[in-house]
Length: 154
Image 1 (tube, rainbow, N blue to C red):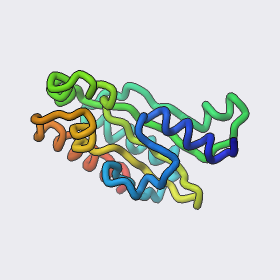
Image 2: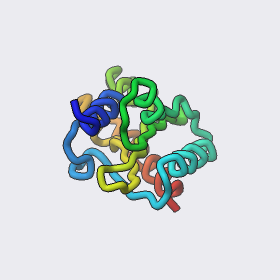
Image 3: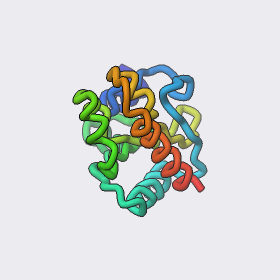
């Protein structure tokens, strides 16, 4: 298995929905370009999330993880965070929504060396789990992710 395929396999398993296809082409995933390094983008993202009173549940450094098993990948980190205000309402509508929450943001260096961040929008989670209501909660999730990531990229 080549290095880049391994990278995508690790990332794909972690967020449960990514494949080896181009992330930016998927309508359910928002991808933004960062002018900062992966580590600095992640530091900024974590700081903004905390400033919004979000709990940071985990910060996963895939590069460090890969290094432990002697696999070289491009820099990649995942932040799992949330405030817990919308998730209970969404999980009430469909318990399996809990597989997609709390929200996650992946910060990574692509094959061209460009740093990007990506996340799954709330509306996709709603559709994926067949939720028929709670529109405002899922839109709120997307709005929060948009605001936090925009602020981190300033």
